[in-house]
Image (tube, rainbow, N blue to C red; front, side):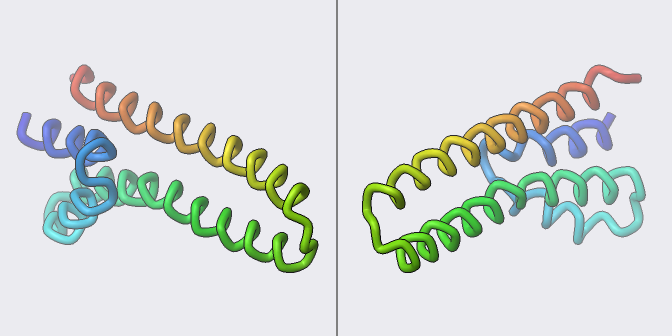
Length: 106
């Protein structure tokens, strides 16, 4: 039961301590392969939105510098923010799903 709770918390931590909690669990749980595997997966899933956001700002900054057109850059920004927000929402829901799945399986 203890492993289930820690594994589920690694995924649920997307709401209260994204990437920090699973990273700590991943480092501490070297002797527990099940916890180690789930914490690593949760950590990587929590990093995806951060990486996407950084890429978004790099692309928008580059687009703004290259095009030097506020209207086009604004339009591209709105489209990319919508795409990144949708991906972030899907990853958030997927993390919650994985946490619940761990708790209800035997």
